[in-house]
Amino acid sequence: MDTVFLIAAALKIGVFIGITMSFVSVCVIFERRFSAIIQDRVGPNRTMVPLSILGFKKDLALPIGGLTQPVADGLKFILKEDFTPSYVRKFFFWIAPALVVVPALLTMAVIPFGSPLELDGHYIPMAVADLNVGPLFIFAIASLSVYGITLAGWASNSKYPFFGGVRSCAQMISYEIALGLSIIPVLMMFGTLNLGHIVEYQTHHGWLLLPLWGEGLELQRWILLIPMAIAFVIFTTSIFAETNRMPFDLPECETELVGGYHTEYSSMKFALFFMGEYAAMVVGSALIVTLFFGGWSLGFGIDQMLPMGEWWVSLLHIAVFLAKVTFFILFFILVRWTVPRFRYDQLMNLGWIVFFEAALINVFLAALVIARPSIGTGGFLGGLALLFVVTILLIKIAKSAADKPSHSTI
Amino acid sequence: MATIKVERPKLSAGEKIYFGAIFKGMLITLRHAYRSLLGKSTGASDLNSSGIGITMQYPEQKWDHQLPEYYRGTPALVTDEQDRERCVSCQLCEFICPPKAIKITPGEIPSDNEWAKVEKRPKEFNIDMIRCIYCGMCEEVCPEQAIYLRPDYVVTGNSRKDMVHDKNRLYEIGGKRVGLVNKWNDLK
Ligand code: SF4
Ligand code: SF4
Image (tube, rainbow over all chains, first blue to last red; front, top):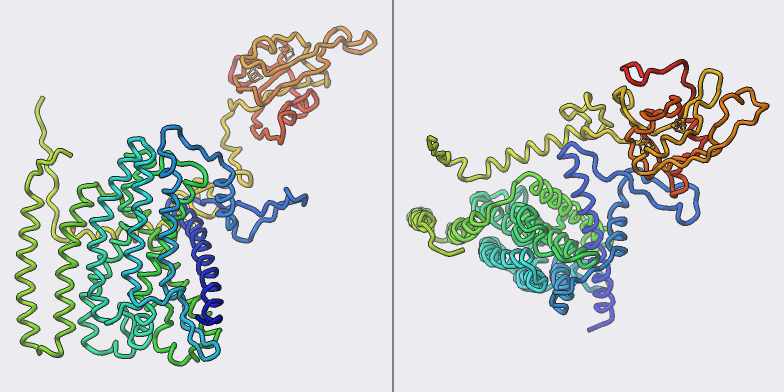
């Protein structure tokens, strides 16, 4: 452990957590303004910098009004009464919000924000922890956040939060599998689990879903696009479920469960749930960008022309990365205000019957495509035919399972 | 009663895949977002929109010309054509006011005054606009046609004291009312 490493790590932790938290507040303002214009409204546009409480004559209005809205929201949450009902299980009630936020922030550690910075001959990766098991780490930690939600539901000792907690638990399990399986084709192609290397690979060989330069111009990559696109769809949808975002936000389904798992929470404890959800959304977008859209790379072969390791290149790459993440956050928001909430049994069906099978088949499809050069066209076509038969069979089985009247008591 | 059995519609393969519908939905929401940014949302001009969506932004934009003629805003005192205070402080309005918003201190008109014949006028006349429910009872009960509900509705203040309209304020809002006003017909 040399000092450079320690100082760099401490700096990176501070900066990246800062970036994530400010992105959370950016998410809030985006969510509110974007949803407003979607619904032909204006949204919060008047929050000012309250100079008048400091003794100045007038409040300062920012050019785009409402930019300080997240600050106002945060202040409101802090100043509100933090009410703990008498009937809750105090310890778990208090620890649950933290259990939601901490995993979301922890997962940020392995995301590469920018290209490595050269300092004294060392290459400092722009991720807090340059782990060799990046995605696995994220899945392992991210799924811990369900403990927070379930504990919140249980500790509240009241029926609606309890329903929310149980729903969240079941939903998390059913989507975690699809989530894990869906990126296996991606990892098979990259041949590495290090997110930094994955991005590096995409810089040279074309983004996974946009192979327009480097090796990406070959036929093989374009055939590979099919399993990768399927993986992308399953992965993105599962991320929605994992972060409790709109089409899958059954744990906090307001129309049925009052407020879901956080019904009994108020003030900053509620705000922590809120922040946890948005932080998970930021991490989710960052992961999608890293795996499928080249992370921090500018693309189109521009990166090769830049002097790697210079500080301004790193900064540029961080900016590019954040721009892509912002795009996906906007996409998350757009989906939230477009797609209505699923019914619970539809959600379960989608997770267990559709996505699980699709992800599984997709793994084999990707394997076949990747093996195509070595097994020849004949073997490839034979494999495809076999896979097709298996798929049809699976669909049949899944259908008959879904059609059977259920005798469960729930 | 005849039973009508409603069948679930059979979905075609495309509809079952669901993504087409989601995509179409996104296009619709995006179009709404785009059009409301340009201020071209459906009905924006009819609703006098501020340029984003169909929303009118209140303190800057008002729709006062749309107020109906019978609109009941703040109650206010009026003077007649000779600038005489119409109110004779009979206190009927104070008694009728359901939320007890009106507080009147009656005063005598000195004998050297040109209106000494009227005998009384209010020394103080306060209407607490936090209490007032804009019911119009005061207007109805007043025998002297001295108090009217005006179309003003912007009553704001930073303290409770700001919200109490005193006599000067009430005359300022009310202004002059000329001639005999027939309260019970449409002319007002
Ligand atoms: S406003 Fe009318 S009712 Fe009220 S005290 Fe004056 S004269 Fe009487
Ligand atoms: S409008 Fe009604 S509530 Fe208001 S002052 Fe007159 S009588 Fe009282």
